[in-house]
Length: 427
Image (cartoon, rainbow, N blue to C red):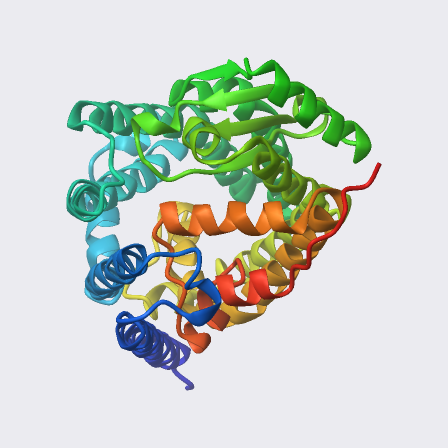
C-alpha cells in the first residue's frame, strides 16, 4: 500500500530545507551587495544623500539582515519542533486528556489554538525585544519605552482574545456542523470578518495604540483638501498620529473602508516634509485609489482565501496530512483545530516560492501610484519627499537586484526615482 504519509513528510521536509537555503542565499546576496557599495554614494544620489547617511542605511540594512537570518533558523527549527518532532501532538494529547471536553467539544479545540498562540508568542518575545531595543535603538529609531512595549503587548493580546477567539470559534463550529461544503461557509464568514475589521480599525482598534488628532495646520489642511477634491476622493477626516512615541520612522496612509476612510499622517512625516512634499506623498496614496489597487488587492485576497479554504477542506479529511506532519488524528474528538493549525503552519512554507509574483504586482502598483502623483502635483516634490524618507528611514539605496525581485513590495530608489519626470500640477 502506498504510504502517502511518508511521502508528504519527505515533501514537507524538502520544501522547508529549500525555503531555508533560498532565504539564506538571498540574505547573503543582500548583505554582500550592500557592503560592496557602502564606501560611496551612488552617482544619482550624490548631490542629495551624504556619505554618512548612506553608510548608516547600509549598516542598518546589514544588521537587520543578519538578525533576520538568525530568526529564520529559529523559525525553521521551531516549525520542525511543532510538527515532525511532536510538539503539537504532545500539546493536543495533553489537552484531550485534561477533561476540557466536558465543557463542550469546542473548548479543547480553542484551548489548543490558544495554547499554541501563547507559547509561540512567548518564544518570539526575545527576538522582538532585541529588534526593538537593540537594533532600532542602535540606529536611533526606537522611541518606545519598555513600559509602552508591555502595554502594547497586553493590548494586542486583549484584541486577539476579544476579536480573534469568536471568529475562530465560529469557523471551528462551521467545520464540524456545516457539512462537506463547510469550507465555503467558512470562507464567506472569514471575508465578512475582514471587511468588518476594515470598517472598525480606524475608530475602534487603532485608537487603542495611538492618539489621533485632527490636522490643525489650516494651510496644510486646505492644500490637502483641495488635492483630494481635485482627485475626486472623499475622506471622513484628516488626522495626525503620534507615531514619534514609538519610532522615528515616518509614514502616511489611508485607513478604513467606505464611509470610514480617513487620511492619517505620522507626526514625524509632517516634521520632515514641506507642504509641497506632503501633497506629493498624499497624491501617491490617492493614486492607489484612482487605479483601484485597494479593490484589486481585496479581490485577490478573496480569491486566494477561497482557494485556501477549499484546500483546507480537502486536507482536513486526509489522514496522511496529520500523520505526515507528526500528529496523531483524534479518534474520539474533532480534528478541526488540528487541521486549521497545521494548515496555517504549512502553507507559508509552500507559499514562499510565489513571493516574487506577488511583489512584482505590488511594485507595478507603486509605479502607477507614483505616475499619478507626478501628474497631480510635481515630480520634483515627490522625488525630494521620497529621498527624505529613504534617508530618514535608513533605506538602502543599493539593494541586491535578486533580493529586490523576491522581497521588495516597493521599487528600489534608483528605479522609482528614475521613472519620475517633473510636471506642472493640474489646475
